[in-house]
Length: 277
Image (cartoon, rainbow, N blue to C red):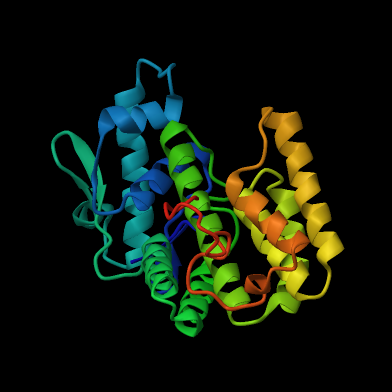
């Protein structure tokens, strides 16, 4: 069985699709698919579907939805009557478990590939990091769990996945910047800083790309914009890290041009070594 949650929900096998169109059964299957091979308690399923106002019939309704999902799974997996799907969508006595078997799970594949890319970046294997992180990001088909109603647990899960995606984007940009692709990155980074106007690391990478492309004045403009945004939105000043990038641009520091093996926003300028997300 193949499971996809990095985009519209996909649960299928041999071309058969098991994801229902009705909102609550689809939401229930999405939670089981997001946490495939884990037992999810009936209470948690009820909280996800109805939050603080479950109906008195909530347990019975969940059982009805499970029956519908088993019938959909039986058709998709071509395993005969719905009762046969009880081995795939299992009841443990206190909760339900979707057994993924040997199929693929796009979120698991993304996280594994992104972690390998991060490790490659940390050891300075920039070509390998770029390939792995590009591959990880291509797994995404759109916003996580697109088209699924989100209760508290699915919302938290989607938020976590989107944060991991953004981290992978940062690391992929960094690996490509280390490889000298600053010209190609400028357009992408200009969009990213608009999307994340308070994200200092993306702004640092954008400033570095602009400087390397011979556009130091625009790099300084980027700093001023995030400085204004941080002041207006949060009432704080930019961190020492991005200020170091600004000062390096002002001083035309040659280290801005050099490929470095540390994270680019540190610039090896005696900054603290702790990672800043």
